[in-house]
Amino acid sequence: MEIKKIAVIGGGLMGRQIALCASIHGFDATLYDLKPEVLENVKAWEDEYLVGRIKKGRMTEQQVAEVRTRFHVEASLEKAVEGVDCVIECIVEIQDVKANLFRQLSDLVGEDVILCTNSSYMVSSLFADCVKNPARLCNMHFFNPALVMEFVEVVQGPHTSTETAEAAYNFCLALGKSPIWQKKELPGFAGNYLFSGLAERARYLVENGYCTPQEVDIALEKGFGHKMGVFRTGDLTGIDLTYTIMKSTYEKTGKKPDMFDCYEQMVKEGRLGRKSGHGFYDYED
Ligand code: NAI
Image (cartoon, rainbow, N blue to C red):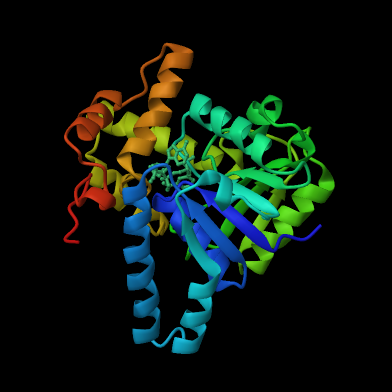
């Protein structure tokens, strides 16, 4: 089984980068989003990115012209998934919304098509009942910025066939990534399982008045050599995403996570991190 043509569903922060990364590495990629304005925005973003690669001497005009022939945006879900070998779901981190999408996808594509979720925490077995062929379902979790970060987690659930996980893993290798193939499911997988432990400690320090968020980041960046502290990373991934995950944990456990009110307030004020220009830090553009 080999992946050649993909569809990415959800053209936000992650989906657009995954689709463009695939096109740059020779795959035919179609990006679909529910909102037409997102697709418009993606076209302008793609253009700016590729022109920037030429200016920086990273790609030739010829290479960029070829990438453009492989990168498509599509306003119809049905057309976006036509003839693909693999679909990567990259929509909001809400289980019911993802489940509905998997039901739709399962009706639209053949049973041999690989279905992946880029969810940050949700294991694919949560969606196994939504698809006709769960053997073709797995996690393929990219890190932000997906055009740059080499780490990807392919997670094989009990329902996932080894053939599917292997094809997903090989696809990541072909994107120039350094993937891991996790053969046992765990919410958050290896990467976010590790990071959430650190993030919980960081929020505890701030909630209880020991440090400011910026001081926590100084400790991690200057003391431990992390490229970005917990809060700088949060600005990059999006305050709204962390808030959605915290809210779901709160609902499930009944225990209010540290700094929940702070994140809620930031979301209300539109301080979503880098994408809105303000988060725990301010960004000029
Ligand atoms: P985002 O909010 O930037 O983009 C989500 C996009 O999905 C939006 O454009 C929205 O219009 C679209 N959408 C929502 N429902 C849809 C539907 N039913 N059909 C089609 N499009 C729909 O979100 P982001 O940050 O790109 O995250 C997407 C997924 O990737 C989430 O599951 C998240 O947990 C995961 N992820 C996010 C990372 C990050 O750093 N932001 C890193 C790794 C994974």
